[in-house]
Amino acid sequence: MNKPKKPSPQIKRNEGRHQDKNERIKNFDEVALGFNLEEALIESSRCLNCKTRPCEKACPVNIKVPDFITHLYNEDIQSAVLKIYETSLFPAICGRVCPQENYCEAACVLKDRFGSVSIGRLERFVSDHARKNNMLKLPECEKENGFKVACVGSGPASLSVAAELRKKGYDITVFEALHEFGGVLRYGIPPFRLPREVVNFEIENLKKMGVKFIKNILIGKSVSLDDLRQDFDAVFVGSGAGLPSPLGVKGEDLIGVYSSNEFLTRVNLMKGYKFPDYDTPIYVGKRVVVVGGGNTAMDSARCAKRLGPENVTVLYRRTKAEMPARAEEVENAIEEGINFEFLTAPVELEGDENGRLKRVKCIRMELGEKDQSGRRKPVPIKGSEFYIDTDVIIAAIGQSPNPLIQQTTKIETNKWNCLVVNENGQTSIENVFAGGDVVRGGATVLLAMKDGKVAANAIDEYLKKKSEDRRQKTEGRKQKSDK
Ligand code: FAD
Picture 1: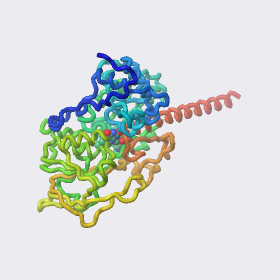
Picture 2: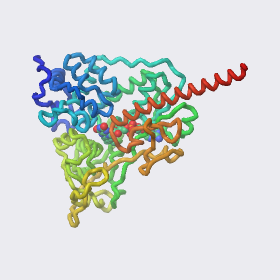
Picture 3: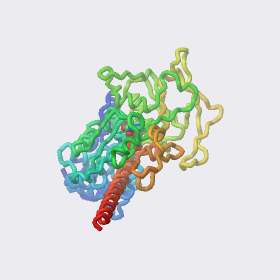
Picture 4: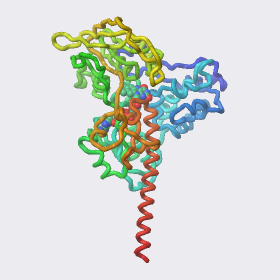
């Protein structure tokens, strides 16, 4: 092929190929098909290699974007992938689910004139290519240093701690309440956005590096956090934010009302989408309503669509512009035929004589003054109530931290029940660190990984200092007794 000269920013930004919209709503295979080598090279030629590196600065883990793209352009994919791995642990995951439009791509200087470089898709291409062509070697692990660290939960925050500390020679055990590992990457985000082979690859690599994984163990119930502190030198809590927020309207106990958490867990983790091959029946009826505007709402609506109802409608109380979901997924949902009722909220759920959901009473909203989040607050419009007939409603309006550890351990929390940590991820208990959604409330995969990295460094420093203090004490005692 004739590779364009670099830089060629005027070439149209490539949005990547997608599975056909009419086909994909009948399967759970990956929707975004990514780039082939030729497409990746052309897209890489668009990068201006800016000296000021705005994309790198905007990335929460500061991936050296211009450098990896230059290696890719030079067809040195091995160097490109190593460059990404210098700061990011799971690029095949982040390339797929990171909201690049808010981070690196938002800062790209080409954004307004020609369209940002498709940085996320290039990251995905490089890491997929490296994985499929066995270009990735397991990182070297230092000699065992004798310290044991426990991670609670197996989402991206804990996986990042496990990877960082294992490389430094720590003995790591990850405890997971569910029967599979990966946290939201496994039970929340559907396989058509994040194929399971990508998650499996990362977890298998950690196992090969020597990280121990123990499933079906609920810390705070089967084993307390204090028990863990007895057996391990430090503990990292990465238990996420898996407690769904209820809609808070009458009728929530009707049959046909799901939390997004329950719905997505049934579909993705329990493989409800493969029923009857898997023993997880899942009822969607003919009409489905989803409430919310985030990734969880989009995933719920798109999973529901693939289970075959006549229609799926999303109710969101603000406008499309305020939706927190990844922009690409909103566009995918629209393409897949999901209806959107913006500036709309549910006020009551009505059932039939058998207690089955029948319809949802809604109200129209308008945007008022800005609230604390800086977004304009939705205000109900009096007298605008209307009904939507539905068999199922899925509430996807937010999640808060799983409360078990907080309830069973004396540890500082804030008013949202999130664990309070200092800038190093250390909680109010000396050898307990935390990060990810249990600290931030619902956030992103990349921020969870970033927290994990910060906490891993802090645990390393904390334990090295502890061991040095011990050594000095023993030395001191020895010197005294020698005198
Ligand atoms: P989690 O991923 O929630 O993992 C926590 C793990 O801890 C879980 O496996 C849980 O079972 C386990 N656990 C909890 N309590 C205990 C206990 N007591 N004992 C043992 N184990 C326990 N972010 C993006 O960046 N892009 C996206 O596209 C995106 N889409 C999303 C879609 C959905 C449906 C959801 C719910 C979230 C999405 N997010 C997305 C947010 C992102 O997934 C989270 O911010 C991220 O997974 C948080 O990582 P974590 O490690 O803190 O927690």
